Image (cartoon, helix red, strand yellow):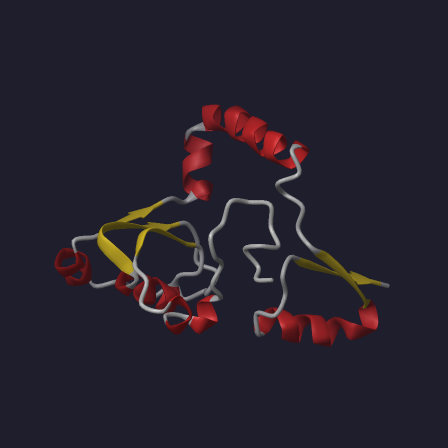
Length: 144
């Protein structure tokens, strides 16, 4: 059972960014949401179908100097758009109540039940290694 089947959210597939683009077998996508940034962002451009949209929502890679070439969007007939909640929400506080209601509704319906694995604090190094090599589905909680 893959990670998409393990969630109640309506995902067709979940691919680890460390396995891109090979994990997708040449498939192209209409929408890609990128919270990672860096080289994954550049790889995502190549995974877009014509008229596809890449939504930039984060930079978990920490690669703040990364840029994407504008000709890649032009040649590929694609669109790149950004959404920075830290910049948007303070300027638009009226969006918080409906977003919070939607999140609470999703949580109450059972859609947001991440897998939680408890590990003893002595296994902190193991937990960090698993996070770094992308073998964690859900969350790890270290227990003293």
